[in-house]
Length: 119
Image (tube, rainbow, N blue to C red):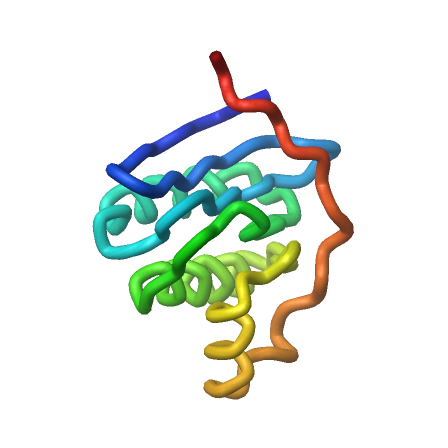
């Protein structure tokens, strides 16, 4: 069941509920254009208290704003006692997490079945 979807010119952040997990899906270009949407998405992802999976399988680009979103989501979830895992982390995200010493902070998620986009 799709809970929320936000779209910018070239990117999207979606929050879906699947099998008792909240799946935050980053699609396309995740950059500063999604800043406002990222804040709303983060609140929505944490409200239920379910484990969070960040899925970057369909991200084509992630800039510093997208990386900041992932880090802020992780920190907010940790404060709330909610586990966060990464599914198929985008190369740029993975490299930056390693560079800043946070590569080991995220467990890898088992793949989730993507919910098809509405027609």
